Amino acid sequence: MTARIDPRAALGALALAQPLATQFYRVASTAQSEEEGEVATYTGPVTPADGAFAIWVPLFASTMIFSVGLARPDYREHPNLQHVEELASGAFLADALWSVHAQTRGLGWASFGIIGAAATSAVSALIVAARGMPGSKGMRFAADWIGGLAGWLTVALFANLEATFNREGKRLEPAHEEDRAAVLVAGAGVAASVVALASRGNLSYAGVALWGLGGIALRAQREKRQKVLLAALSSAAALGAATAVARAQQPRFYRTHTFGKR
Image 1 (cartoon, one colour):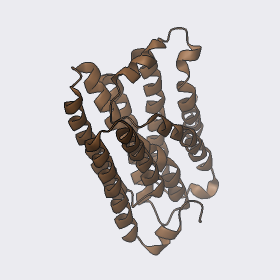
Image 2 (cartoon, one colour):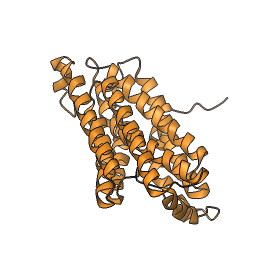
Image 3 (cartoon, one colour):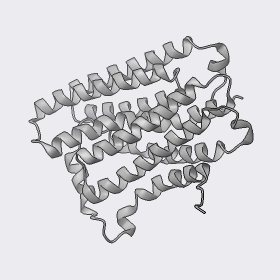
């Protein structure tokens, strides 16, 4: 008889795998830790300032809360909740794989594909959960706690695309690099705004995506890249507006029942 894997146990294990994967090169002798330095070599203006990456601490915590909290019996009433868990599991798995791949193989189209899968899965989980509200406590909980990861991965996807261009092609001259970066940041803003509308103005998504855009703006300000700074600030404004519009269009019940207000 084949043993059946408990989906919720797998979800928790994959959530835990994310922070562990970031330390893969330290514990695996086969890993090439020098690739970590190569990653920094190919990043550009779309990568947020270093301090912005501290967001991973609460993001890892939120994914653990997500996986543990959904085990509550009173959160199991919505028929689509299992689908949300499956999508989230895919996001956690792809995120962990990206960490390992970046440490062992560096950046490139393969790593971009992996983070693209992670972002798509996380955003899909958020939208399915958000569309299950306002009647379901479980779906509200899921949307609140997966939204942050989806927000960060949306911005990270465009930063990884820039790094992939730099590695797989010829790095552009500074002026042209700034132009391309401004376009990519604007693209991140458009993508985040669309997701904000589709997820009914989820605050955790918007907040973390704004954090990422703010990190890009901070780096642009330090490096005196005015076009990138303008693109980041404009994208942040567009995301804020989209979130406000989406929330204003929802029933009062939805607007007032988020982040623990059950």
